[in-house]
Picture 1 (spheres, rainbow, N blue to C red):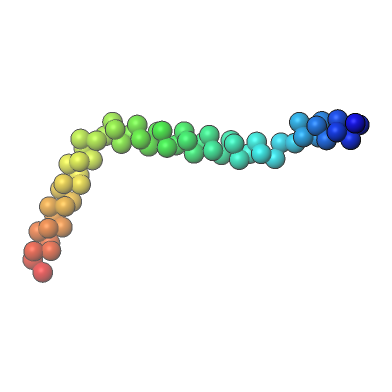
Picture 2 (picture 1 turned 90 degrees about the horizontal axis):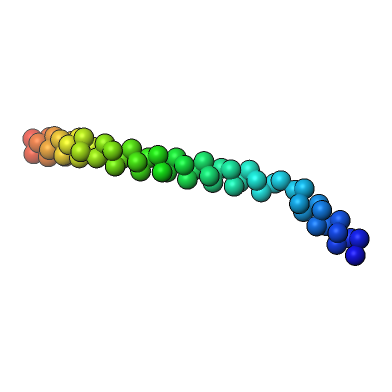
Length: 63
């Protein structure tokens, strides 16, 4: 019984998994920030991609 209690106490003191959880939360926060930024700048991004596509079509037609 004492071994079981010692094992449970050691398990509660172990913090090895905490770092992985922290990194996962940071990654989730970055993903939310990127998604929010893309939603906020969507009109300008669409214009940028359309302009780029038009320039590439023009350049490809000149070859």
